[in-house]
Length: 277
Image 1 (cartoon, rainbow, N blue to C red):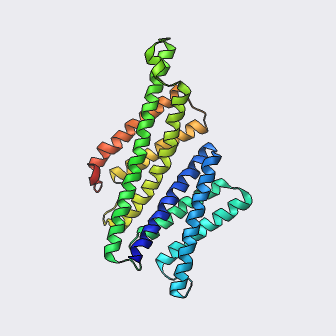
Image 2 (cartoon, rainbow, N blue to C red):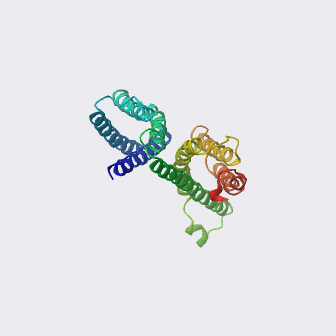
Image 3 (tube, rainbow, N blue to C red):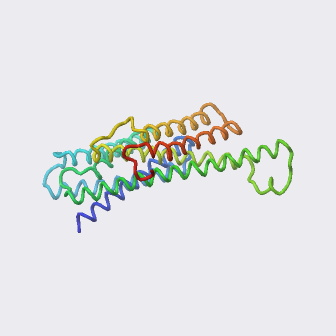
């Protein structure tokens, strides 16, 4: 019973870590100080939980817990989060915190879900199933965010066309103004990109541990990473190149077509993504 409770707390740590990385990504792209503050406190809670378990492990074993692969991974994740928080506190380097904790999240996920060291075969199998569920859930959440973003972009084009043709009427009034439609579309993609990134990271961990014949050239794998790159290019074009308005809305609609191809066509051709075929 105690082992199961510890496992649940480890899973909670991974979830809090994922939310913190997501908020740090939003702050990194949008300079959102509120998101940065919440991300820091979530990261601080993760650090407290990790430190408590580290001290508990030291008390149980009577030594510094770093002799096994699992202990090494855990300590590595703890070092990353500790150094990133200390350095950021001293020098305010938010960019470093974001990237350092993407790595930390990956390491902590491997530690939590990989069937190594003291985990029993049954417990490891259950964790691997939960890892797959989290991977799929995050992927679908990102797909949902991208899909709603597509809707906002489509409404933007409709509203843009009505205004250009000066077709005043009830239809025009029922649709939000262009600025709000553009902003909502952007915010959803800003949320969807890190969710998809985290999902792919967990999916790769699961595939390497669970599958005998995992190949990077699998259609679903290639399609998912292509989609991540495409939506990341959208953010780059908007933030660095200053592309906005109708042009970026059309781009977003084209990206949604890539999403549909990846979800339906590439999923059906994949060797192991049977859940969506």
